[in-house]
View 1 (cartoon, helix red, strand yellow):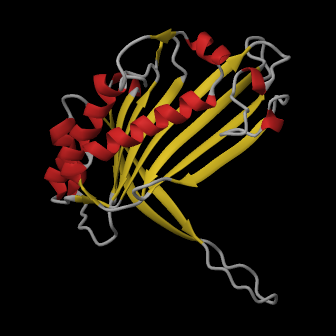
View 2 (cartoon, helix red, strand yellow; view 1 turned 90 degrees about the vertical axis):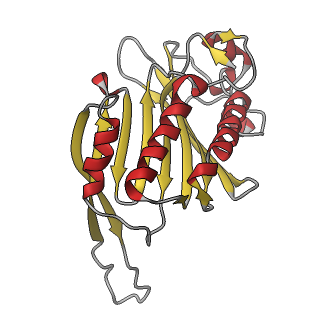
Length: 254
């Protein structure tokens, strides 16, 4: 279902490549040369990864975490509503509100970024794909209750949440074909004059299975369809009316 008042604040697709795949710092410049017409802005940064070794013996204090730093570059368009990030053996594509639609722009952005990454690195296989959508809903009514807006029927959300206004809740379960589903829902009060409460849904499909980059479009479409299905299951008819459904062909829902 497509909506007049979409709730998506960010959608992203992340590709992780195997540790043994080749990498060198010239990839940043070569990648930029191929995307600079659409993503002229460059920002440098770094990715910090922490690893901790645990010693279960009582006499030993936990070891200090070992930090690993690797360079990252972000390529964006004006306003930073469209963004590609590249770091060592990782590629991610982001779109911020207003969401441009799956078939209209986001899918094309993902496939184009994959093609550029393959050309400049020579890498042909992806180790893991994550497709993730973040939705946010703001409410002015201080008497907000979750059951009016989220489908607390015991499917995705537990029935006991229906009468509550505050929540931190996560669902995770495996799907077929090496995929996993995860949804995190958080609601809380906001101290200002415009919004009394908000709800954020973080929905992810993780495909932790190697796949050739040339064949990635089919699983991406399947992952996207599953996210749509989960979102539609998670909201009530009252929420659907608030979003303002637009009737159109299947596959253009988000």
